[in-house]
Length: 440
Image 1: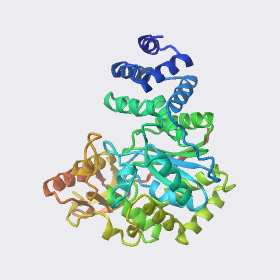
Image 2: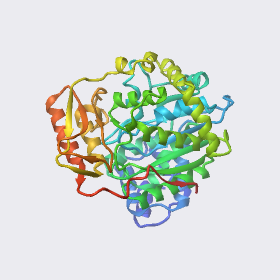
Image 3: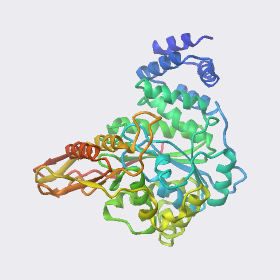
Image 4: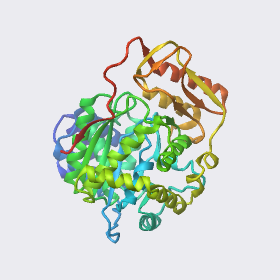
């Protein structure tokens, strides 16, 4: 069997056999197939797709390419949440302690930001001392102590995915649905999950901007996840404007801590609403609660009692961070006081937001990466003060850019100002936060 024969077959729109897919993924894992051959197959898959059988086989081959974590000694249901990425998308920081406080083990393998999207690991590392590079033993110990742990993908977990993802980014094949499905499910399956809720973002700040394509991705994720033995559900959620108010690493952590403390501004309400809905679905899939209504009541109790905040505190301490961040986020997190207003150019109503551009503007401040090796400045960011549908006057503040570098800040102000579209008439069809639930 030769790699070029497999590439040719997919190039010509033929179905790959399980033996061919397994051969190729084994070669990727052990460095026996060249990068240019991997890239060629990725492009062939991007252009010609895969059927359900191929997608299932690809996912299982990538899942089996490395170690699978074993948490069977932890006598709790194991569940996680995954997001396809967006701007201001910080719900993992709220969901993990909430669900853990409800008695679920949450082994969260998270990622870093790239391009316009933020990364959970980068946000957590803005907490002084917080470590995300955990060994398998440390990860399991923290799960047993706290109920949840947050770490990055290691070389042992789905190594074929790690190699292929880097090449997908470099070859403009990231958006291929079979490759997205195999990447997500293989990583999550390697984390020993029993249940998973996937937040599929759709809109101007998402990788999937059209609802039809986002729905197709959600259906493929659910079908493949269930076929791999993970009870899976997907929610299509809005990414036509930043989620909450904060965009940037430290200020997003601050917003999440304020939510857990019950001391947040109204602009952060969508973060709480979405976190609760995703968490409730996790509890139902984990068989902790029989209905979403029961799950919401349980979540309300652990939030209002302070138990979720206490879980967050325990996790920060267990992963080497400064737990005082839970009491004084503004004093502990690296934040900057230097700010610049983003002002409305004219009176009217906010009709749309080019959310991807806001993400890119914050990344250009130093809050994100253009290349994976770029260093993050956790202190920079943007705080939005308006939502789609709001009426504004000329010169009204749309939000604040935070950065010590004035020239970069002024460029971010210009880009973000242009990202807000203002019209003369009120927008009747306001974005719906949760658009659809996909169960199969």
